[in-house]
Image (cartoon, rainbow over all chains, first blue to last red; front, side):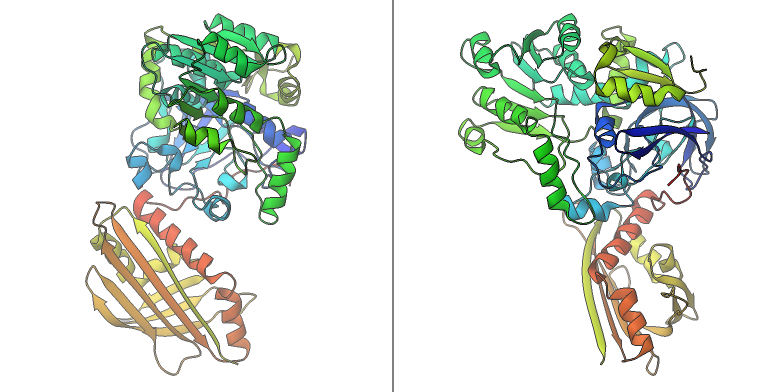
Length: 393
Length: 160
C-alpha cells in the first residue's frame, strides 16, 4: 500500500510498504477513505521528537471501512464505515472503565519510555513516535487498529466523511477543552490559538453555553474563521492581550482560559532526555508564553484548560498568580471514546458542521506538499484532508 | 565471584485475585508475558522445568518446585538443589480495599555461581532488573485486563 512515512526532519515521503495485517485477536484493518494532517504532526515533521524513526508511518486522524477483523472483534462487520479515535485504549483497565480513555494502562508497548519521563505512561497513539507506542499511523491506504472492539466508532451512512472525520481528534479535543472550563451561563472564555483545535474549542464553548468567546491568534484567515464562529478576536501582534482582555471583561478577566497552542517540546528520548527538552524549549521560547499569559489573564477563581500538547518542562510558570488567584487547571490528551456519541448527536441535529475547518482536499500522494503548505500556512491552509486512492493532479 | 540479584515490583491489576492466581499457578503461561523465559514445562503439581531464552546461543535451564502455595493469595517457588542456578520467586495477590482489583507483588532472586553461567544470568537479568520485572508485570496486566499484549511487531514500516 501507499503510506506517508517520516524520513527525517522536514521530510516526508509517500512510500510503498506492506499492507497491515491482523496481529492480535482484537485488531481490525481499516481501508482508509479520508485522513487528515494534525498540527501536532508538524512537530514530528519539524524533528522535535527524538523517538521518531525513519520509515514511521504518520497520521492519527483517519476513517474508512472495515476490511478485516480479528477473532475477538464481534461488534463491527466487514464493510462497516468507521472513524478511529487517535488514542488507543483497551477498555478493560481502571482508566478506560472510568472514561479516562487517553490514560489507558495497556495500549503502549513502550510504556517504559514514557514512565522514565513522566512517571506513568498515557495511552498509545497512532502514528506518533516510539514514545506513544510506535504504532503505524493512518496517513495510508490501510491501517491496523488495535482493540478495535472498543476503538472503532460506526458512522451512519448519510453523514459524509468531511462531517465525521474530525471525531478522530480535533473536534473532541476542542470539546473537551471547553468542557474542562465548566462553563456557566454568562461566562466568557478566552482561547489562545485559532488552529483547528482552537476553532473547535470556540464552537464547543458556545455549544456548552458560553456567553462570549474571545479568540487570540495572529494569522488573518484563522482569525476570520474564529470570527465566523462568533468569537470576538484579538491579534496579539496588534494589541497587548492581557490588557485587552481586562478591558473587554470589565476588569474581571475571562472566567476561563484555554491554551490551544501548547509547547510541543517533544524533547524526550532514550538518553539525554533533559538536554533534548532544554534544546526544544530554547527553540520554542514564545510558546510557554501563552500559558503564562493565560494564567495571568484568567479571572480569580477561574479555570485554565490546556488542550495544547506539552511533553517536557516549562520554565517560569507563574505559580504565584496561579496559587493566589485560586485557579484550577484541567488538561490531558483527549478521552475521544467518551465524547463520540455526544458529538455525533450535535452533528446529526445540525448544531455544528465540522467540515467548516477544511481548507484543502488533496490526494494522499501529495502529502509532502500538504505538509509544506500546512507548516508554512501558505495558501490560507488551516486543515488538509488527504484522500487515499484519489489520482494526483 | 557469586552474583546475586534480588528485585521486587508491584502492580495493580483490575481483576480478581482468583483469576490472576489461576493464570500464574500454571507456570506454562509465564513465557507469554515474560521477556526471558522461552518455555516452562510443568511436570506435576509442584515441579516444573524452566528454560530461558539466552543471550547469544546460551540458554539456561533449571527445575523448580512450588514451595508454598496459598490459593488465590501467594505462590512461592525455588530451584531444586544441585542445579546451575539458584533462583527463587514469590508472587502475591492482595485484593485492593477500594475495588481497584488486585495488588500483585513479585519478588525474584537469582544467585548464580562464578563463571559462564553466572555471567549469562547477570547479562539476562542484571541490566535494569527492576525494569525487566516491571515490564513483565505490565505485560501480565495487559494480558489479564485487555486479553492480549499490545504490540507493534509485524506492522508495516517504510524504508529505515
